[in-house]
Image 1 (spheres, rainbow, N blue to C red):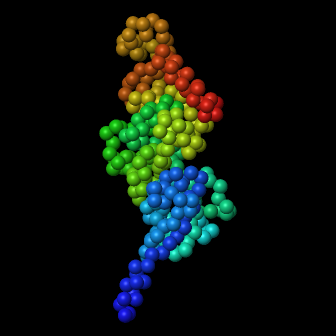
Image 2 (image 1 turned 120 degrees about the horizontal axis):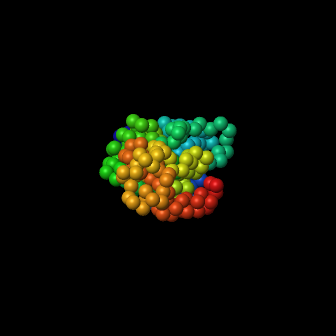
Image 3 (image 1 turned 180 degrees about the vertical axis):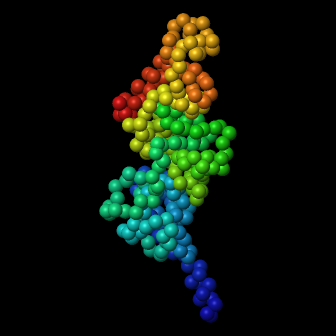
Length: 262
């Protein structure tokens, strides 16, 4: 009889109820998409494991309240706990909560996964350091982020759940302008835009050059009609304010106005 009693106790599952705030609930896996989802567990798992099992990468979490008290990721989940989870910039109902999201690198520097190549080019256009290769595997992205203290931008929750990832953001929007707005808002970058300061092709820094320095590489009409040139210090690509420049500038002006960044 004693053995049977111990087996019954061991098989009993505990329950905690979670509340995800300020948009985090939209990241939950389907089975937890209730107003206050219940999480069933055995023993006392760390709360970080529970949150990530429900679909939320730790990089999206800034504050956790367990029964109204601020706790860190190692908090052991208890039966009948009420857990509130908040992202960065959310309003927290207590003073001086324990912040779990580390300060992002300053100045902001990014490494961007293979599905966000257009976002990488747009960030470079605005002057932000955006490392990107369409050949990067997840392991390479994480290695670059760790080695160079970069923020991972991705649409893959899996990569952001790795323990070694410190800085990362899960891009929500399917559209380029939306992705760019999200990134600028998340890292408060609107006041740090430096247009045309980076090469859109390779991420190198731009430098002003005289026409004489680049003239041998220019086509006839470019030599005739343009006088101001910039060159990438890394790949050597030469830029001038031609028709393509005007198209990009028009998009940029429209974007900044709509995003209330001008």
